[in-house]
Length: 305
Image (cartoon, rainbow, N blue to C red):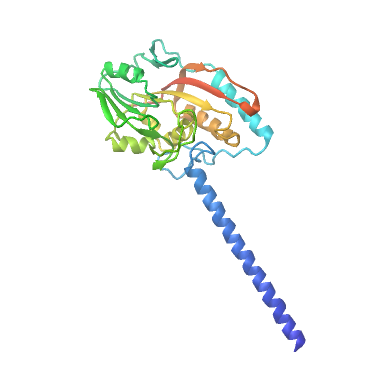
């Protein structure tokens, strides 16, 4: 009797242990699932949305770029980005580069050769204004329909002139009506923004079937998830010319995502985009202050109307 009671007690303890182990395993699986979900939806401040092979028509790799865990891997990827963003030569010779000087810094350059020239009824999407409409007004004066976007400005939706329309909306890799941006030199206090993917935004504006003759993006690191989404959803096929300022700051994008940034640049090239102009900023290559920035002009050599 005593032995039987002890056996039952041992069995009960084992069953409790197995139950606890099962609960813990399910909890970890739920946590992992939530972690993956966050990776696919977060902004660039921590990590990039990973490319999904399930998007219809997407030109993506079968497996996403890995997160880099070791210091050596991160340094190697940083060297690769330094080469790609600042040192590699241009890939397309544009015989007619047009300049539009900004009020605040530098100039935007676009290709005006016979293949990529801006002609009525040209469509321009310009993301990142910072109160300087020089670029947008200049293209509006050419007769293009220009749509300007910047959620960081204290400016409401309005028609600036007959050819330039402004929206306080941001561009990223996902849609969110109450996105909370990181606090930095552009965002001084906590706020919320309306952000959209390019595909969603074009749908909302009735441009789903139109060609973007020129897409300009200067959005302080949010270009990475935005471009990832543009490629994954196949929207790059509707873009003839692409101007962008690439940003890599000391703390974001996170260094473990550097392989994902390399993948974006490679996928952009595979999609048909070739650089005709590059303006590298002075880098900081000290690892704790690592900073790379460069203005690029691309044309889409695979574009077909």
